Image (cartoon, rainbow, N blue to C red; front, top):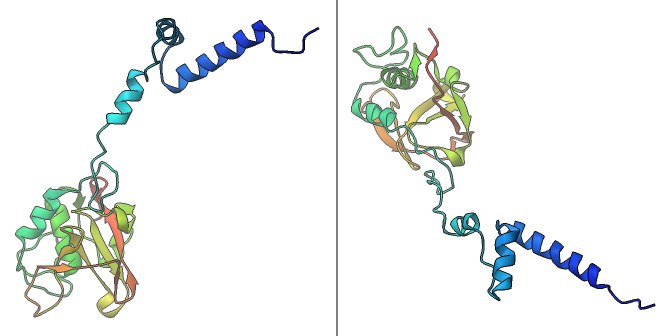
Length: 201
């Protein structure tokens, strides 16, 4: 008796290989058999070919794949308030007063005007507002917060990956654009993103 591979075994192995090849290439077996009968190479399935030509997802400000491009409405409102004077505690009696505001009063006002918040929060309150975002996934319109330190912390609104709108201090010229990073005076930057309208008053 021969100990070689039988014809049936070869056929089974061939069918299995064809089945696996068809699955990998997203091609049905009948189409694969048709190409083999004609002596042609089996092409990749349509889905497989589309995947090879697929355009990349939109990029975040950090150049990473992701669909979120930021909230330009928040940024535009923040910029429109350039020069608004600073007053410690200002902007917390009511949202968007006519007078000066501190850093969190200013951010509260912008978010109220953008329709993503009602009422006001202090800097400490903003550290848990909205949804948490990793610093590397930040986008325009996100909020940056630093807690602790002189004056009880600071915050602003991201304009782009390097700059923010904020109201820094008395005599500093009011609301203005400034650079920011992953830390401020050794305090890590907390990034929060508007999730929906949230009543805080």
